[in-house]
Length: 119
Image (cartoon, rainbow, N blue to C red):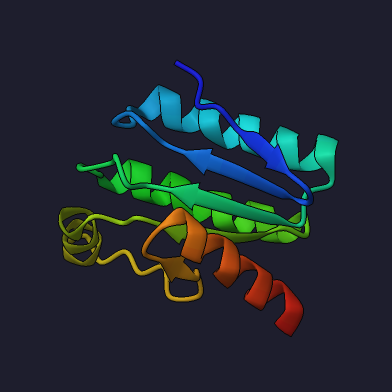
């Protein structure tokens, strides 16, 4: 299953509507990086509202996505992180300290614009 990646002006919007398995996460990573390259996007908002469970591999992939996107010149913002997901990330010792977050997609877009203006 591929996760749709939408382009809006200079941004990419992704709403993950399914639980991520390892292969879907790897496909998502590859698709997103290719989309950043092909569109020249400068910002990415990844909405995790529908993700209720996350494991260490998926967390690592999401962290890698942030680092790789940054190397390609795109800022990433996560939105909609569920309480159970945040607790799992902390329990696993995974900290996404430099990754901006927001409650929902609308706030995520505002946060992304703010982050890009500060650069």
